[in-house]
Image (cartoon, one colour):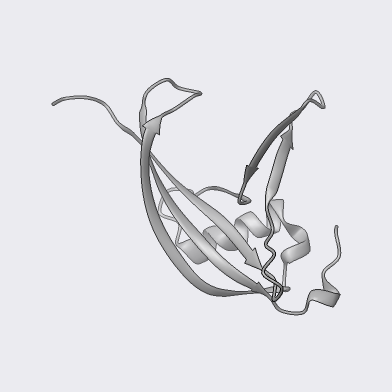
Length: 112
């Protein structure tokens, strides 16, 4: 039909504990210190031609340093969701890879 669809590849990190709890991001703080609440899995956009494992390591190293060397990948699940982008106002197809991970040793995990 000739309509434009923006495509974004994202990676989400789901870290499960043995007791059934999991890590969730409950907000973001912008540059001026304003907190914007939301509940989602931590993650980010994948870069062009980036493998899932490369993207996962980059996101953990940049955003979730406390997980470095403390998690192991269990499985990946791919989902496709299409909806209107709030930021750009156009139809956007999100190619989301959810990486389910397990804490290697919970007692070693400390906030950085």
